Length: 111
Figure (tube, rainbow, N blue to C red):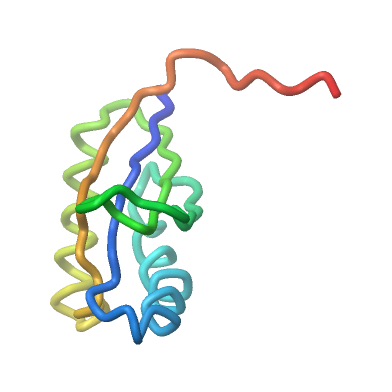
């Protein structure tokens, strides 16, 4: 079983509604995406000084799968299904999606 992360960089299209955007992302979108088989954990980060044209927010999805292409396809299907159900936000603008395969086991600090 391979381990991957999917990094999704995004922006809120209306900065005055950023609180609403973050609440939707955390309470609706992350749980929706976690319904995808193989996606085992999700977390979000805010980039304090994003470069021009880059995303201010980063969602990291941890994936465990035998076939990343199948998982990517299932993730896309989940997103499309949730969009049809009206569960996507008009505030989200995805800037980049990057899939990265884990090549070493995590190393813990000895402190």
